[in-house]
Amino acid sequence: MLTILASTGRVLLRHWPVMLAWFLAGRLVHYVGIEVAGYVGAWSSVGGFLILPLAILARLISFVAMFLVIRDGLRELQGIAPVPDAAAERRRTFVNTLLASILPFFAIYTAWGMLRDDVVDYTTKALEVNSGVRFQALVDGVELPDLEFANELSLNMTTALIIVGAYAGRWAWKRWSAKLPKALSLVAVYFEAVWVCFSLFLIRIAFDAVGGWADTRVGMQWVIQLRAWVGEQLRPVAWIWDGLEWFIGEVAGLLAEPLAWLAIAGVIYGQAIAAEKPWTNHRLFTRSQERLKWVPSRARRILRELGADFTGRFTPILNAIGLMWRAGPVLIASFVLLYTVVLAGHGLLEFVIVRLLGPHDLFEFWGVADVLIALVASLIFEPVRISLVAAAYDRALGAQRRHMDAVDAVAPTDAAAEQSAQGSIENRAKYGIASVGETSTQNGPSASSGTPNASMSS
Image (cartoon, rainbow, N blue to C red; front, side, top):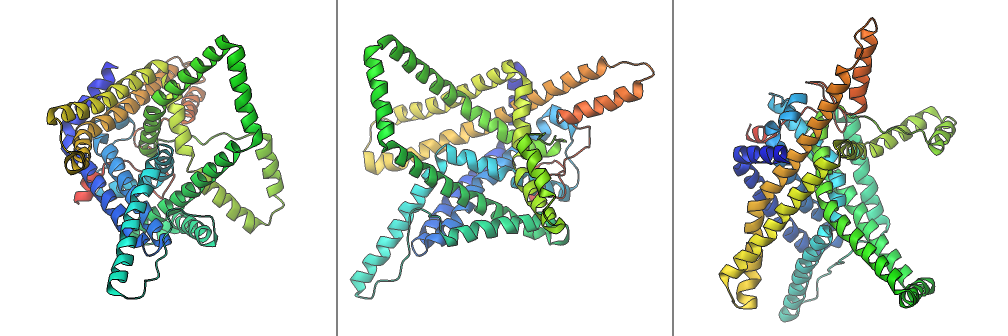
């Protein structure tokens, strides 16, 4: 825990102003993006939803930049893969890291309800513009304009073509990126954000529909009534059951957010580390591989490339989870405790500011002050939170390195020294630990590591 605190303080002292600038830039562009999406969405729902991923992408870019800015202050990570000196390499790393982070970030963004909040803000702005245009048309006595507005996406031919087209564009960039202009990497980032965001929209709508359908079934009502009857007849069992439900819910809520952010840090920093591919030897996988041999060679090659492109998005997440698992419960528990303290400090600061301001009018004062208070608290604690997550990842990486060094130290030093050295290399590859200067080539043509601050200024 003390090591995590020391690393957090070190990176904060060195990089707090730059982190703050990236955070403010992300929040500002996110707000402007939702406003623009709402204005366009008042006229075309598809157009509005095509702009909305840019607002979410702005927040992701700010978080990725904050993580990479403090990269040179993480000693363990620097020992494995130092920051490259070339500005072009740092820019390429930034783009590759951004592409690898879109899927896990958007998934967590949706799971935490932040995507729903953005949709609500977008819908509010679109309805405001839509109503204003209609009212002005009635006042002027002109024909009502043809406005197409919808507050939710639906699975139709248009959305399906958008998802398929965006995924195909992203796949084409990965396949022919060496021959295409580097400026098109921004288009590839947008394509990745669009297909992931639209897919998550539809998945969330499908889950809500399935949940609503299940809640209205007669069988579900029987289960609820049976649960109530058992609780009345066996009260001790009901108390134990309710206690377990409460405990599991509290533990899940306590662990989910810090571990999710640690996984995102693993995806971001994992681009600098040689990562293992997930081992798949399930009989269904083997059987599908056998059947794939009957497919024509050209079609089989395309299918394999598409499959590798899709599964490659989940490999960094699996590697990050594996690193957390191997870090041990003590380190993870220490990180969760410190993360909870930071969240509590954030809430306490908001409470203190409200108390210091005292009573005021609800609409004229607090309608604006609430947003400003939340922003002030975030300006103070967001850099602390990102630094803490990065320090915990660096500590977990260091623990894994020391474990592998201990394995190497007990290796036999007889005539089989060459075999021992080969085993050490295989062990390091197995646990995703690279030698100094060794880089990963997934998610792009190059994956050297670096910070974006120098590249942005160059």
